[in-house]
Image (cartoon, rainbow, N blue to C red; front, side, top):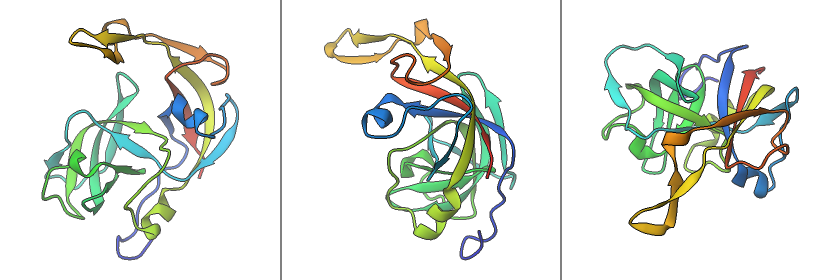
Length: 188
């Protein structure tokens, strides 16, 4: 991709852990199975802690525990609606995921996970075009971690981090889970 945002380097033949939520399937996305290839229009990054500014101009991604990545990334786009970062893959996130005042060309560092989103808003079409990926599903892990009610509000449920449990399955149709991790190779 060239243009206002310059040339963006794309990774090739690298395995990534992509979170695929059950609500996507319930909202008309297909069940996924090991061995299939599929195209997807974008990737979304999610972080519980805001990424930090980084002085080095270096793009890296290292797998860490919990199907997450430690990344250093270039900010490709930032607006009041969204931001896009590049660490070898282009990913979109909430604007508050990067430090306030970050602008295109700045670098950030931190931990994140990758999600297949339902939709992307507020990103120019020229950038969205560079976010299309083709994937080969190598493995699927279903997240069977129980959800428990909050002690202060029994109507609010949250993931019980003390009882994390995954099961390897052949397809997302094999077991009903809140989330699946598709271990995929990027093909194009």
